[in-house]
Image 1: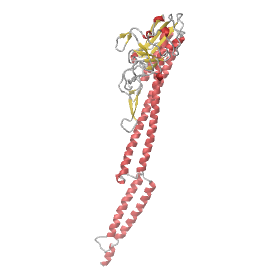
Image 2: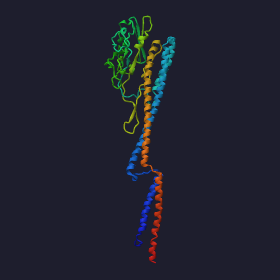
Image 3: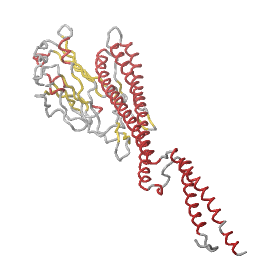
Image 4: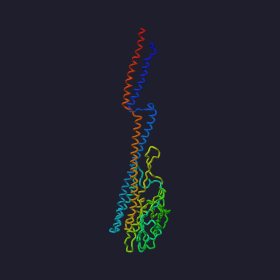
Length: 446
């Protein structure tokens, strides 16, 4: 190579290597100090883009997990209120049974009524429980549904029973006569909007089954006075007659297992028109109860609960990372009115033996509704718990995948850092030596 002072090729080459090694040292130092293999798009455009998408997903999964946990907290609040309501209903049934016993006087029952009223008021307090300012069990968080009517089904009566059959000809499901005599009497009691009504039938020889559903001066939901509270019908081959209404989702109601049944249907829809309690007490001419007949005649179980129409006010829990990945939570009306224990300011009465007997069935049906809601809440809690576990595992897996793409192997990066540091120091030394070559030219000029 020619000797010159204007251009020092050896020094220039050494400087280029020095700058290159300097950049490599800086990059290795950044990776070692940050713990990341990919610190920007320049370190790997594809890896950077994929890892950024994964980071978005990780944060989204974390928020969805938080949403699910908040949902569990909401359900725990509602579940706690329902636990209290169920306990109160157990107490109410206990009091109703006590009041139905004639060892108590009406004065005793009046005292029991005060405790009964307070317990019903507490049920309303439970229904008004809130989470983050939202009332949960007062009926304001129901899912969309049409107004429904009370429907009770009896599988203990002969499935061929017609609502125009005479009471004295009624049979049980096995075809055995109930033994109702023409000289027997019956007291039919029902509860509507917290008020207990009764009708006495003297001499059952001329009465038909439909008579057991006829009461005068029944006020309907349109404010008009009508005769008749309920209709009786029966099923054939498991298909309900047109008198039986649909459920709140507009679906036809079938019988359990497709079996035939005798059906009792309220005439009017809505919570205030629900048949909260319905009892028939048949006695012979001497006043002795027809136990076997009463057992069959009082085997009506609620198939559809009366409800008011409602828009979709259910609570939507966003538990996924995509749009509309939600779990909907709805709560039925668990107020005293919704449970049939109250209508306006009128509360269920146990001030007489007859009213106390009717109250037993009312509380039974209220318990059935409350336990159904309690079960729904527990099932939703379980579902959300599984959702939380799934989201947690998904978050861990995506984090592990993102780590593989982006996290630095510290042993490898320390090795690279050491290598580039040594090379930097070596080129620095070589550059110093290359600059000393100009001294040779000066010796030629001496």
